[in-house]
Length: 277
Image 1: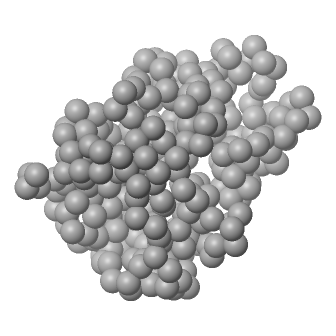
Image 2: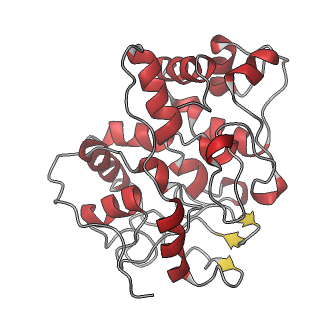
């Protein structure tokens, strides 16, 4: 229970760019997850509950409020939370927070995100405490989960691939964390390595995410252009619209991305056997 986790990192002294940080926050799903717009909640003041097999989890307040948000954090606290999933008190975060996908964010990425979050007005509202069932309510047990399943994302560029394709890989496997929803999970809630992007029928709230393997998408008449268009508008090649969690991803995230990044995401997904790398 006393086993320390995470590592200390050198202080980040870079000046952050607010606009780039706000863009990265959109790409990373921060607004979509940590804002409960359906109930009239303020942006980043805490998200809608996530009902899982392990209990109900509440995305926390990320505003600058000193009591209920990140107002008393330092950039080092923020970097450790985002890249390592460790709170300022040294406690592990539940993996409903998608920190495993952010482990390779650069110091520049972190400084830009931090600069953007410093512009968010304080909202003095606490997020409800998690309602995890026993034994998952024993947070120290997450240290064992981390030892068994935590790994860095495969976002490294692939030699011989275009800059566009590699940008798509960085987004899909890192910031946009597509695998958080589109990959099946094992009994412990960890992603199954040989099911990456093959779909998940057990999302929070009883929702499902289909396969986004290139072969499956092509069989359903998707191509890079239609996928990029859907990520911008939420409209599928059949003229239908995304619903559920994917609608939120588009409305609060991918709709704000540049055309170049949407094409990069679509290029990577449609030109890659995601089960191999």
